[in-house]
Length: 214
Image (cartoon, rainbow, N blue to C red; front, side, top):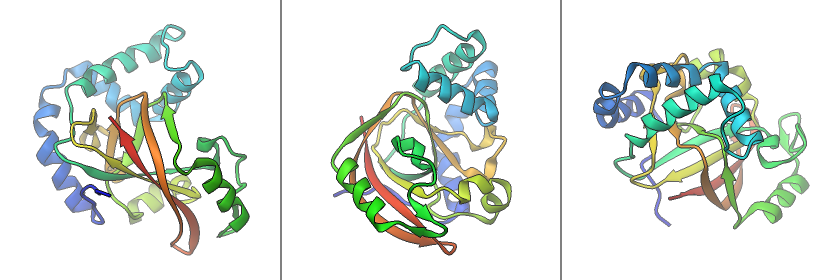
């Protein structure tokens, strides 16, 4: 199985992002830039909740629709230059499970991990929202101090992103530059092909390996 370029270091991730997305950034309109910046605030949560609750359809909220249309236009101008591996830390609810059901304190419940594997391995999932991912595999000091909610997430989605995917490095527009974010277009699907338990900062997590589908 082919795997994309991986980054363990924030500086190398940043250099890669700026190398491939500097021209894209320069070609964005002011309103596209503003909407991408808005996405990195609480607005991003509102946008994704809105998209997921409405099966990706617009029309119920003019303010959110405006940002979504601007982000869509921005991402239409962007493509990944090569295959890259990104990471997304989520809670159980991202997979339709009860919150806090996977872990007992800092340990993954083995029976729950087995249930997860039986339910999701070799399945394809579609997300009507945008996929916020990070280029860096580990948790930086800045992330730990500035985004403590991410540190607590029990699931790490490791996603192989093909060359030519509508996705963009938005760090230079972000309110959270420590996240090294690669933003993937809304309505994307991914196929899950692997599962393992890892230990990170003294906490067990479920690593879910998947391929983004073009």
